Image 1 (cartoon, one colour):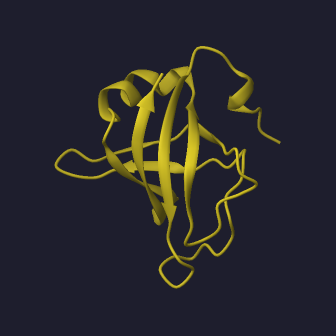
Image 2 (image 1 turned 60 degrees about the vertical axis):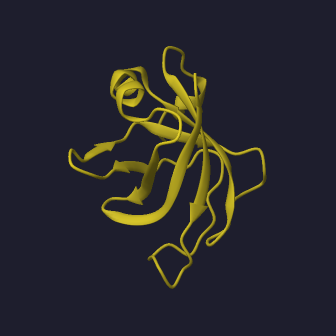
Length: 110
């Protein structure tokens, strides 16, 4: 099992409102929980994918088709990219590989 990013220091935290796609819109039918590791896809003129991220969710889970507030903890190795590309208000996709499973909007960065 991979070492949890939630227990590391030196990274960056992004608070985001997440909306997962419905099972009919994506291949994922399962909820996400604390410890989930999505790929973050920033689309647009200069697209970028950011990994090394793990979720912490205060609720038990966010079901497919649901919306909730999620803390995304990014490893320090990608912190500079996160600071530059995910300012407050940015909307980005959450994915498993290249399969989008939902969207997130940045509420705070710390």
